[in-house]
Image: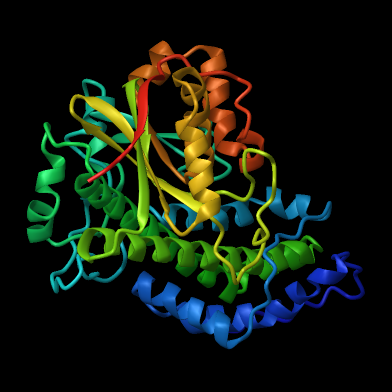
Length: 410
């Protein structure tokens, strides 16, 4: 279905002259969404969306339109419901069976593969009833951005077949497993498969929103053309994020399954860490507040770090990785490794919570051990833009204590 033409009469929409291609993108993005909305496999839908974006010569600028007239739409319960569906979609299993993510495996993925160690780091966060908290589950939440769930449902996605669940990760899952290149690369790859799935689901859900008339009708009723445009541009951003996660899955796969050694990996060992997560952290700004030239460019992939959390050798670890060829990220990672333990304890929670779409948190810690300051740090970190986190002026939350940071070698 092609969305209705947006006819609002004569409305002046102010956009920088060098970004007029945003409006040229609107109809191609609508056409793209119509072509992928009926593809049930989210990976195929997202990959097709990326191909069509090239075919339709989608412009280079990434942006979201904002204006005062958007306020009515953004508060409209029907619009909030549509956004809620998109946020929830990344947590849901696909409507069709998906193949196992392991290369050359032809099995069907089970629905509840874990991106994080169920009997490792997640078990250490669970309370006596097996419950933990999850952040950023949905936008506009009245529960302060937290959702309670069972640890066995945390970080699940349709990832691997039953055989690969048992065989591929067994060595890295052992309680006495070493924090070495082989084990951490494997767990990073598993984590990024999870992130790629979420980004693919997001592309699929946004395409459905753009291709159906509900959002346009709400926007027209509120005399607000901006939200309709912005929704299409959000699809463009989602496609860009999917391409970034897909590239990372391939890079980590080369490290795990192929002959290439293209990653620099570091481990930060904690004495205490009340949360766990995984994700891709774009680095648009370095420690000297220089902005990378590819910021806001749909056709370029920003420098980035990837991370996962693991419980090895009796301690929680944050594993960070970048590509050796990515000099910007390499320098950034080296600067992190030169921080002392107190600065790391302040900085790492902020960059991880700000750079991740979801984090899993100890319920006991949140309910009984946090101060008001700790809660402010953790909740505000979720909402901060990356450049604001370069100097962690708040200090470390209570309950976060770093022992050491080092590079991971073979």
